[in-house]
Length: 219
Length: 191
Image (cartoon, rainbow over all chains, first blue to last red; front, side):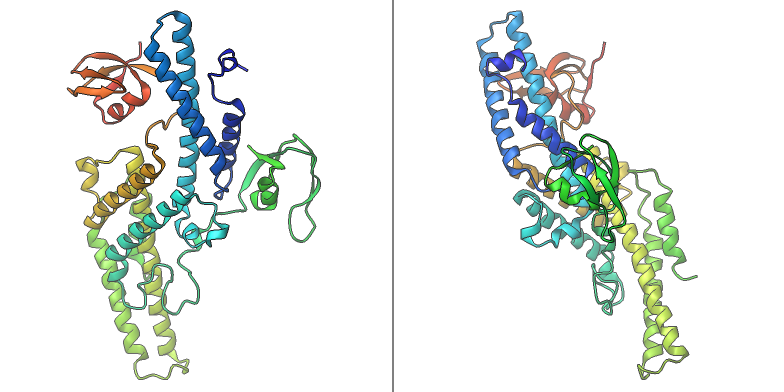
């Protein structure tokens, strides 16, 4: 614990650490993970508290070296937490935009999106669809004007294949506990012994469940 | 080979640097659209009054036209969608206002799309009460020295006002300075 945290002045280390973990996970995963609603809310509350404290201390203006340094350190603390939070949200937004149609059509119950992200998703989809329809689709022969289907004779959304996330991407990972013999695929041919803290490179979809249950870290 | 022009459009796009766009090639785009119209006409004439079940040369001929339209459509969609992705990135890397040289590369619908996209992003950031377009780089010092490049005038920063006159130096919070820096009105002064 830093000395200024002793005074109750800094951000709770565990929450910032948890945010860093969530950020790392989100960065490495090819799909959008469950939105960390609680964590984000708590972190923002603390950041607001921290900012109020800083403003109050700046107002007191002791001017001596210790107060100035303490203020600067708290500022840096705050800036770093803010960067983490914003980067986390930006990472999610990038993935969301990359797989817009996919996330827009996921049923609400299985959607990893926050309420704000869901709104964004639909608005962005609306703007994009409108633009594509206006500048291209409406100019094509009839029967070929659908955004999601190549033509009216298609029986599924064959224009949108590239829009689902590629879950078979390789990721670096480290188990958090001894998982033991783990089956990587459906046939049972590929079995790997997952030892705690050892580094592995595996396909994301084989360890997806482990990531969700936090039994494995993504690097 | 059908869809040659459409493929050329895509080649134009891919030979451009990442994050940049070639000017919208309206001429070639329109040519591809007209090709599709022609394919559609040919298709119609081949299947007219014909029994759908008869698998003769006309049937297969019409199928070629159908597939050609689809190929052209996929190429054009890839062209427009990739351009749309780059246009989105402009909001993040350039800002809300596009310089003339970028605007000239976009067709009218694309210019409208940029505005719409900016609106969607702004709504999202407003919902969160966070400006995600600043703090894009991990922070170093919370305060930085800056030199004002163009006259900005009186600005209210936090709880006090600062007079940002041309060529003046200031010691500001990084977050306060960033919007000015990204617009080129200010620069970070490194000793």
